[in-house]
Image (tube, rainbow, N blue to C red; front, side, top):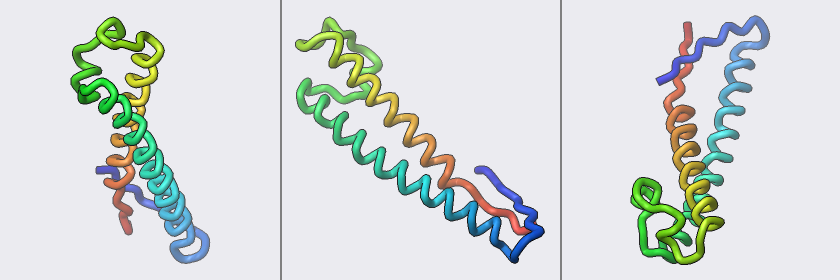
Length: 99
């Protein structure tokens, strides 16, 4: 969990509102990116009949009919998805401290 304390000398709570809005906007973009990336990853999983986690842990490009380019793309999408999920988790855990 991340706790953020804002000391705002301006309008009552304006900085907190702006920060909250920015975080919510980023959350929306991350959720959209996760959905799009999950779709791309799912295509690879269906094509090769392998879960991405298993693929990333065990397989190499030589194990795929299609070769290196798809291996790199699939692994890149999988890693992006993991990072997006972690970013989402961290942002969702933010708490705002009143004082």
